[in-house]
Amino acid sequence: MLMKKWRWLLIAACMIVCSTPTMAARLMGAGPAANSQPDWVISRINIGKRTIVINDATYRLAAVVRVHTAANKHGSLGDLRRGMQIGYRLKDNGNGQSVISEIWESGHGATH
Image (tube, rainbow, N blue to C red; front, side, top):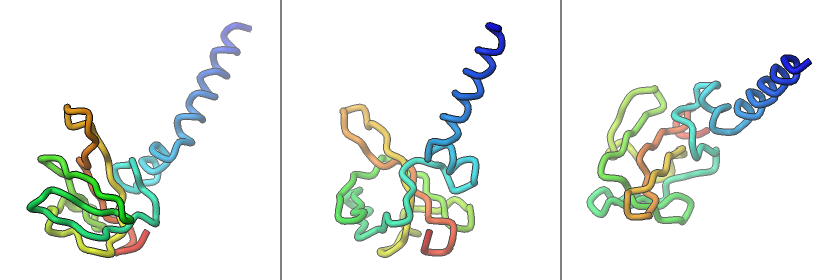
């Protein structure tokens, strides 16, 4: 009886983990899952100042940012354009501030 309870608990835990947007995006190959929604659009990017504006919210860019293009290739910040729909990953920069460490273009050209 105890074994059946553990098995159901394990199944339930797997279902919860796999139903999160992060894991679902990874399982569906939608990029490096994190903040990936179809309506996140680059408004501006200033590589020199290490800032990017996404839907009118300004974010700092990490010292090293991994960029993934829609063709599943590694790119650079220079590949990012205004109007591009993206997903991104935030991390703590060590000073208690969140910075973008990874950006990927949506999988269908410039749209998600």
